[in-house]
Image (cartoon, rainbow, N blue to C red; front, side, top):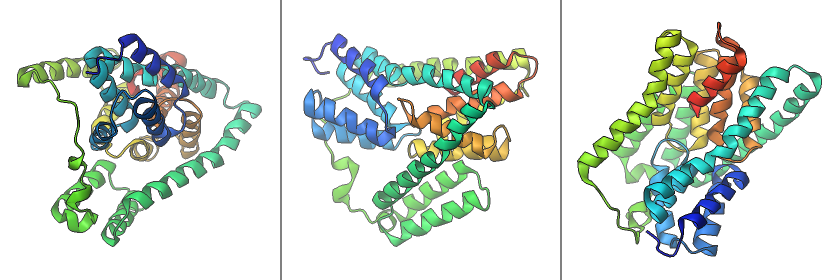
Length: 321
């Protein structure tokens, strides 16, 4: 814990960051580094990098996970909750409103023209991200072959995204340093952290896990009892539950999996609607994977019979969030 940082000071910083965190995960991580390491000096450089590398190994949005970890380092559980919630809270409400505008007024020519103009800009942003990530990651011929094989599998053969991810992980584990082109000198494990974690043992960890699982699956169970287990709302909950545990590699990998499932597998959205959602997510603060909220909102809005469309969309959006 950093004794010189008050909870109020940390809370106000996370509150402000939630409204200005534009630019996707790269921009958000850069913002946190500049403010927390360089300006405020709440955390040393090596500890920040150690935390970032750790978060990159986890499924889900690395920027939000990094914010949550830093919040916990500064002020333990209250700090982690404040950082994690405030990092996404503004974007939740902003994208909720934009999703409603899209579904309710998207056929109006002026609104449709706005989304039509955003699509090429979003395509350029995604292409730039792919090129930038590829330059940093594909540092050997073996990695280039693995990336090309993964692209062929998901684009032409429609292979499941989790299968590709786990297969690539197994290949990387088997071939280890010969595949990655890394030496032990560049391993994230070499970064030392000044923070010594406090552990309450396996019992505490199991209690926290059990409580989290109850919170996670209770809405899906209640919706199943209300709407039936074949309801699209239940399927939305199950899809995004799976996405939370299999989407390693950051926001753009999450988009690949959700796009494949929502567009190709379930047919909830058309490809152009997926691009519209990405455009909205790129133009709002918060993590890029808030596009999941748009996907779930539109899917529930369009495909849930017997419920007011707006209510169905709101439930779907909350399930994804």
